[in-house]
Image (cartoon, rainbow, N blue to C red; front, top):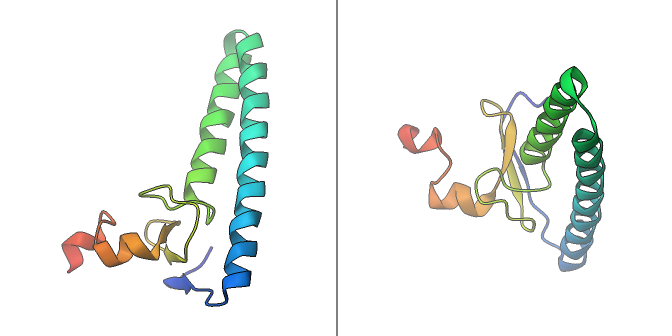
Length: 107
């Protein structure tokens, strides 16, 4: 993973639109996979169900920490900033508003 704070900004409106559409496709793929895992989990029993529940929780956490959505507001569009200490991505709007949890104490 990245070791320094990284900001990803796209100024071109066509590229921003492409980025948003790609995020939507990836988000839909995530939801399809999540639904499949949940269906398997519902049909499982005992240790297998517990194992699948852990996989489902990990899967959801990876999605939340990914660059697809802001880890605070879950916004899909917009530029992102990576905070290495948190190991996840935030939208630049949340950074500007000062709502990122441990960064509030630093200001």
